[in-house]
Image (cartoon, rainbow, N blue to C red; front, side):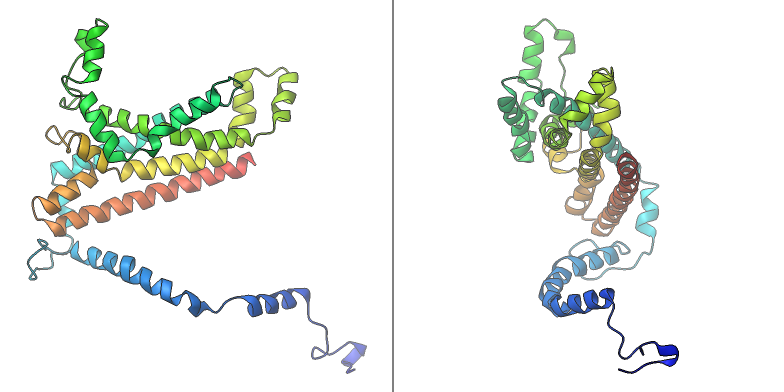
Length: 315
């Protein structure tokens, strides 16, 4: 044994620390990084390279067919601020996303609270309320397109109960078409939000509710002070999914109204499709897609930061 000055063990013969031992064990058991190389290469080829090329085309006047095109710099992005249709589409996109996020999660939470009770038909109600979420969105859109038509079931029902003044072309009126689209989306996916909230409700210990009730807290007080903080993870998941899905919404809008009447229900996604495949303005449409990507990234990141802070405060 080699002693250092003052009788201490030298660093060469000192036993390794637990941290060093754990680090060596991880290094020995961790798989080589190049195991992920095939998957990363495929991901880069399928996702990263096309995305990078798309961003490049956003700075050109490419029409989608002609191999000859010119760089226009930020011209496509500058044109958006002078394009009334693009500005209106951005406004519609944000309005739909916020409306769906608020209404869908409010309805989903109410449904979850209802089917979480001790009613005998709660299992059947859970299945029925969740059923619309498993239907293909395009099928749901065409179904509601017929129901909301001038001679559809909705107007027929209103006429049958004496509310003829409420009959109208729900998808053909610029004043109500956008809200009809929001209503269809909420109808389909409120059950999805319900399931996530229901999972959160069932994880709340019943003893906490009983203790709050013994302290004299009423149902609303128990929900606000006990249940709501414990549902923070469910709120985070539902709000994130709703806001991202609402911003990217395309298929239901296009199947229900095609962005019409006029441009009354156009979103960024429908406008991107029209500019690319109807007008042949691929460069401009890709610039719109870049803006859509930035909106999704900013909205999701900021929302996650706020909700994560709320989760930490509630825990």
